[in-house]
Image 1 (cartoon, rainbow, N blue to C red):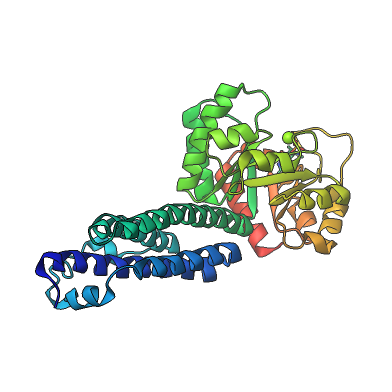
Image 2 (image 1 turned 90 degrees about the horizontal axis):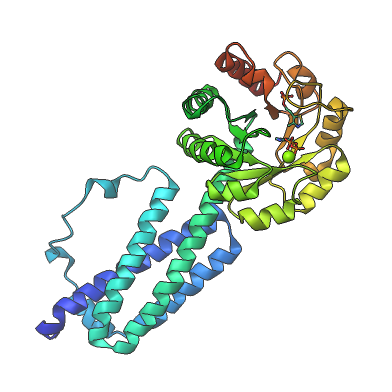
Length: 356
Ligand SMILES: Cc1ncc(COP(=O)(O)OP(=O)(O)O)c(N)n1
Ligand SMILES: Cc1ncsc1CCOP(=O)(O)O
Ligand SMILES: [Mg+2]
């Protein structure tokens, strides 16, 4: 029979142990079947195993004897939010919170029964914090990579006349179908770039569009942008990666297949391929043209990598791009200089999605 003075403690430990186990398993299923990340699966399994080892210090028969789910006054106290899970991210967040809260309860009340148990659970709790960090980062970068894979229309924008015009354009153009924005403004000072990028990253995130900074990994990190785009004259992709970290995107400009393969080897998440046609935003002495696009599309190695044709692309010449096999484009003047940018965005998007 359970000593009444300990009965409440045993019930608390029993409930928290079950809740933590359920949370660990919920996380592990996402890491295994959602992220398909072997390293994280191994870490999650090991943590769950070590947690079970720590629980073995508790008098199990006492915990089970004290269990009385039918008289649990907390069982009927539900919050509305616990029945709402919109995405796997919200499931993961709830599971992480459940594990962390349960481990803290086990640690504090477990010390009453066995101080060594409290110490074991404290160590498990800190390992759980790190695992949760890695799962959330992987999940966030996973989302960015998925949105990148789904992207078709990429628009390069400058700082525009003021913050309001900048913010309004991003909001309206994202709603019209822009998948990725890149802030590229060679005339702007750092403070202006920084302030616009803070706004752009936030507004783009609200609209499910990605927001990338041209040339500057430091600004991408400082403004929590989704990534950075570097050309052949900027920092090498591997260095940009070191600066922005594993959970942001690194895009690389390419003008021939050698540069394409180098970009892939250095960990690019996507490539820009051009310049394709003469345009108004940047002048070139020569053009890689549609032939380069055909080469990239035909090269097996580039298969999985999102590639955006760039340079003088408009709705009028888009057909010359899509017939090479490309179905992603990066444009600037076609949208920013259009009389009706929203209509132009919709026109480009329709053509990209229809393939003609
Ligand atoms: C998507 C995309 N592709 C290519 C470029 C060109 O980048 P880069 O060669 O570094 O030239 P600048 O844009 O820095 O003048 C790009 N910006 N975006
Ligand atoms: C930055 C850059 N790099 C290659 S072409 C280009 C400019 C793209 O702008 P537009 O679409 O107006 O030619
Ligand atoms: Mg550049």
